[in-house]
Length: 63
Image 1 (tube, rainbow, N blue to C red):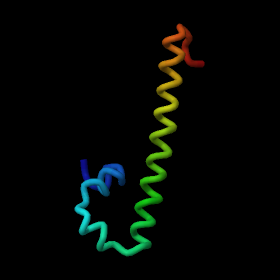
Image 2 (cartoon, helix red, strand yellow):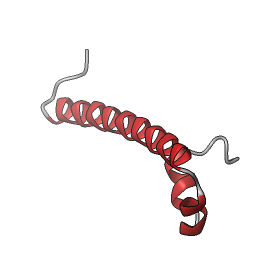
Image 3 (tube, rainbow, N blue to C red):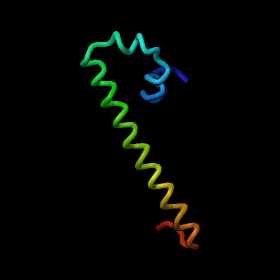
């Protein structure tokens, strides 16, 4: 998987502290916004899957 295909949070997590610390404020704010967007999407997917599991546990099927 290329760097462009990886989620931003994985790329940032793999960066050494010195690389992140050398970035200017606007670059860090942009990375923060991108990671926040990915986190929000992950929560939506988590909630969706959790809902499907609850339906299956109750014997129901999703609409």
